[in-house]
Image (cartoon, rainbow, N blue to C red; front, side):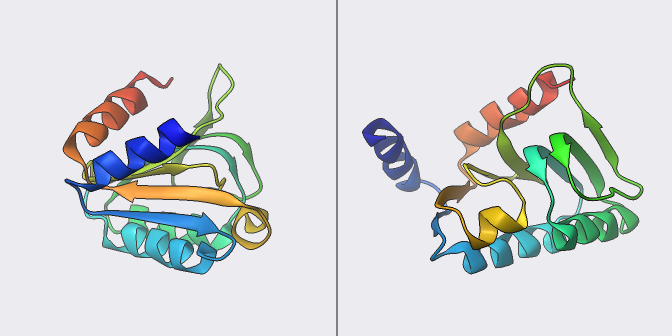
Amino acid sequence: MRLFIILLLSISLYAKDSLYFFPQDAKAAQDKIEKLINNSKHSIDIAMYNFGDKKLAKLLSKAQKRGVSVKVFYDKKDVDFKNIDAKTLKKKLHTKIAIFDKKTVLFGSPNWTKKSFKENYEVLYITDDKKLLAKFNEFFQTLD
């Protein structure tokens, strides 16, 4: 855990970033995610173990209708993805990652479920750090 915190602190020296601790910051985190979805112009790439938040799914569908390329990989889902490239993978997917326009990445422990945003203790980190983004974009490309 110390190493994770040191990593986050060192990254934050050079990038615009946000760190959220749930449940106290869950509403602010969800608002930030909604803003990132609504402001995306080109692409949204998501790898999420469990996706059950209907409001976020609807926002992704609206983004797709605006011409944003939306890809979602998941292991479990409790929502319908309308007109979205969404699928399960061959291997177990336990990540919780979203990349917006290849310029902002969020990652951490929360799934996009009502329970994660309302009840759980979670940590979410959002950054535009170029080195991290390069690694996350590369990782996302390896998913099949």
